[in-house]
Length: 226
Image 1 (cartoon, rainbow, N blue to C red):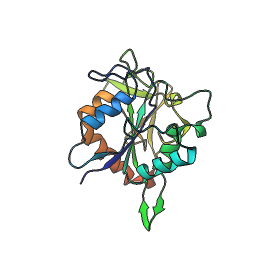
Image 2 (cartoon, one colour):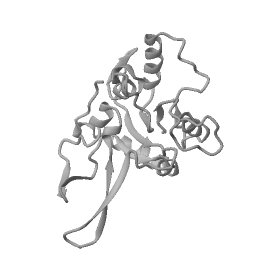
Image 3 (spheres, rainbow, N blue to C red):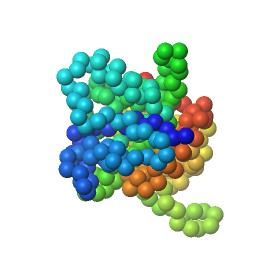
């Protein structure tokens, strides 16, 4: 059985790489791609449709509309983009943090319960087709086998606090000090991070991985508040 997927993203962020075949030039193009290329099986993309203009609604109406979509999903994709954070607005006044918070809560409606969603942070390439604004890497020589190994650095300071707090939040992580840096191993984050190109080439694998982590959420310290 497939999984219903909600997509959280910054619609008007235009500092992303143009997506071939799409014309908006914003993060919305990547949502359109996901909707045009359905997830396998009976997966259902719950992202809002492009013709849904929420600007005319009152905040509580929008909140209720989004709550219903998130409640009925089991996976939340957060599209990480360079300008997803509005620097001069409080995080609690921006939609992405609220959507992530709601995705992590256990809710009851009409005698039914909705459990926390699995969450995947999908990093979109910037206008230079680079992911370095959010993911970089460095190498070190292993002290045992003397082979060079690569470590991925996720720049969590570039995103919202609630996303940052749900990364590297495993209760008993496996870590090692290497070249003066703390390196995490294994499933150290509840929110997994993947680059767009890797994600779209193997969507099922990443969704399955996120569901596996959701089933082990007790091993993490989830942050559910904005």
